[in-house]
Length: 557
Picture 1 (spheres, rainbow, N blue to C red):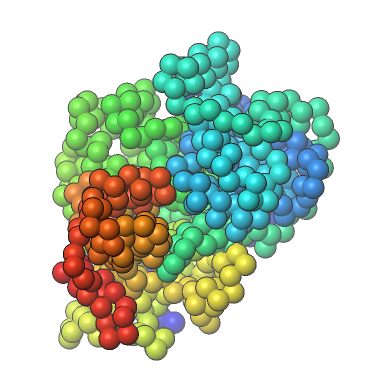
Picture 2 (picture 1 turned 180 degrees about the vertical axis):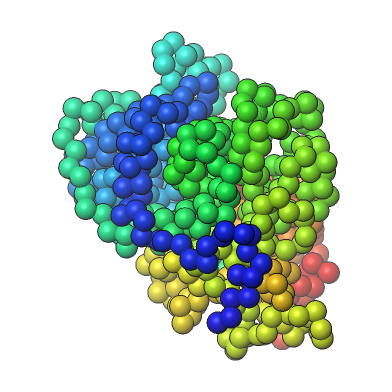
């Protein structure tokens, strides 16, 4: 394959990376902790832990897990929490114990949580108390046998710990009543682990590090199998792309995206290599609070999505911040809109570097060079990454040179590289559909121009992208169709100025008395917030093909 994009690489950018620089993600932490020791590693809710503390706490958590009955190498452990100091401690502890992390969206409904825990075979879970009542409803139907609960302030010093936990539970009343017999608190687990022996595990690069759940290209949520090598390769790929001006032990990274999302997860791990301090933002939806936090730091790096950048730009006080230290701002998860990118540059004097990836690629595939204005593309393939445009019969299409019809160079984007997943957990049929001759079929439609820049123009399937999160019509339709007042329904995405897209459901009624309000209420109990329909339309019939398939294209039109 002719890697024409290499000619467009920034000066000094390598064509290939060493995916085997570290033996495992645990090896990465241990070496980084040894090198940066007392340097600050993570900050959250006004408290900072050093690399030494991160190593010590994660080692204790690993020892605790190893001592649990039935827990062994390769056991799956779920984490269901927002960005808190407990997250990296639990994550590294799980990996150091030779186990596999299953990241769970804390806003999942009982139905969604049950599916992921059953599908992954997770036998233990770390969960913030705010959502323990959700777990209580489904735990009997899952393989989970060990529950570790945590409160937001658990790793904060006294008396702040007591104050934060009291306010969350008693003042704001954010913790519904719950009961999980045998559950153990996170601090108690750390205390038990601190006095227990830790047995270092020989972890192979091909061992599974994460089961990262995604809808893939179609259907219900599936666990992408991401090995230690997959993640480490992407850390190197994205790292060399953004780190040209980084200084060891100096950079301050702002992480407003949740660590359970692959974009934040990998970028956060990537920045550890330079001994960065990562500021974890627990609730980025509180924009005034987010701006107040930014005001405290001479931050140099931020990752985010278009809706977050747009929200900051429209929050009072953001335009008064000091942006002189900012080196890199990366936008991913969804397309960065031109008006947002241009306004960001005008206000901050810095560019948003648009990148592209997907869970199945750990996630990074492409990015624009740093300090380049918005250009409508997702940039160039990362080092050690190949891209190919294929037609419906898997024939390779030519790069678009600017001559002739662009449609002849437009097809499905396929990706090959060390960051590509091994397949979907316990799902050989979907794995075979997504991986073909070593290529990952992304489900995204686009083209590559003569300089090697990749442009995404559409999606092969009908996936809806809400604030960077994938929403799949099949899942929403199955939920709405289960309502006794619904005869049939179809789901599509429509343009939304705040979230990029939002979900619309078109319903044929079974019960003439069915109202939009009833549909909204029903969906709120069955679906996470970003999946819930924001628009409901009632019709007498749905457009269908001769074989009875609902034509979503006509619904959109």
